[in-house]
Image 1 (cartoon, helix red, strand yellow):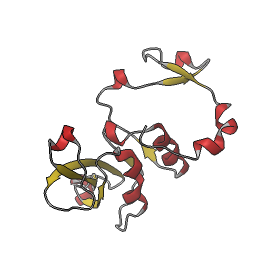
Image 2 (tube, helix red, strand yellow):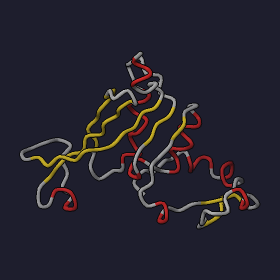
Image 3 (cartoon, helix red, strand yellow):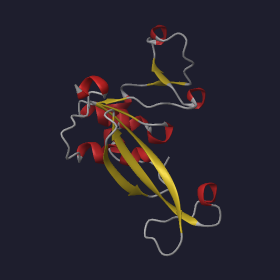
Image 4 (cartoon, one colour):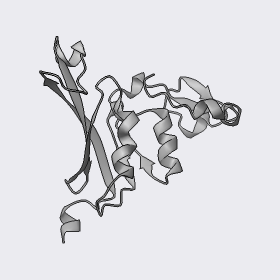
Length: 157
């Protein structure tokens, strides 16, 4: 009966919350945009579609959530069998799509500013999505040629 009222437990989402702090806190950082003249830390929270929190982690405020999105999913010690995960724009990076795919999971970010995102397409596939405005082309031959560099993921840029 609970499955009909709540979600299936296959979908989860994560989002961060920023908290100002005082005193000596190890992960606290000064970021004027969020904390003014003080310092703060970020708590990344993972929740399932059954309204249950299954993970949380303090993360540096200066790094996007994307660097930590998979941590709680892979370390999930609940009975939830997460298949799809969603984040806001801060939890998105191109490399996250690839990592989820390699793990057999679905990544479904919610973009707040899709018009400002860099969208790439493969030449010849333009007709598949005629209403999207692509900003550049993706070259599939780039992957094998630059594989060693692609393995060095940089989440900050």
